Image (tube, rainbow, N blue to C red; front, side):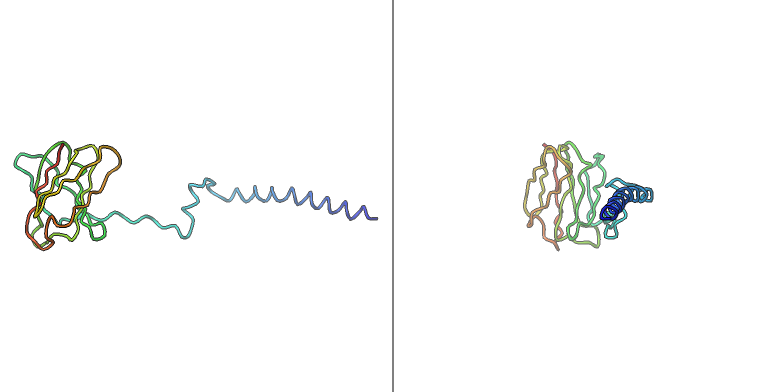
Length: 162
């Protein structure tokens, strides 16, 4: 009589061992995508990245006559005014000054593409030369304090090149 309950428990264990994988396979048919790269889209704490800051026009860029350089894009990065010089290459110069009705920002930084030029010279109340990396990703060069007074009217002369 002791063999009958043991045989039933073996059959029940075998049935459970078969039913668990079958149930798991049935559940997989309800999942649209199984790849880990798609799981994050359905997580409730996943948020879309913040949109890029909209362009602003805080500073005027004045290029010498005959220069065919695009006006640098400007945007706010927290409390830093970021001026994109990624489209400039070779050698050249231009002047930055506050737009009418605006003043110099507290902090200023330049976005540069490595390898397009080697140095960026900035002349204002003082002078600074910033080195641009030769390779790598787009780099942000912060402007040192003291080159301009935030409430001042001095224009910054920028020279980029070798």
